[in-house]
Amino acid sequence: MIFSRAIRRKAIRIEGERGAAIEQARGRLVFLGGCFVLVYAVIAVRAVDLTLISGGARSQSYAMNTQVKALPQPLRADITDRNGVLLATTLKTASLFADPHLIA
Image 1 (cartoon, helix red, strand yellow):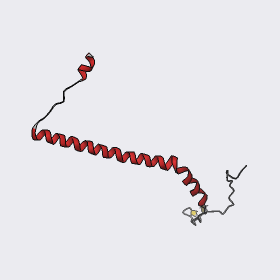
Image 2 (image 1 turned 90 degrees about the vertical axis):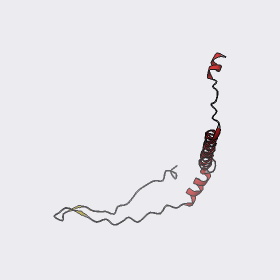
Image 3 (image 1 turned 45 degrees about the vertical axis):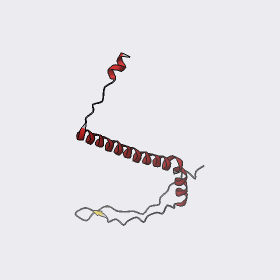
Image 4 (image 1 turned 60 degrees about the vertical axis):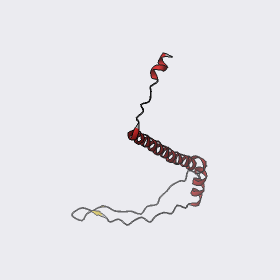
């Protein structure tokens, strides 16, 4: 009981024009804070919707419909030293890879 009495404080009331301005500012801050909370709540709900609820089905259907096309490799110039001796060039080679989803 003694502890709860010590915590209680009386609110300071300011009368007149100054008090009305402070109350108006407090009301605006509460309204603005509520708007921020609402916006962040909408963003959070949308993020949960995209990732957990409908994200899995959309990403799987998107992956099934997309086709991977090999991009043409750009032609690169040979690298030579100042005397014109070839240091590096592009060689065409066969590529070997395995798709882990197709391996039993």
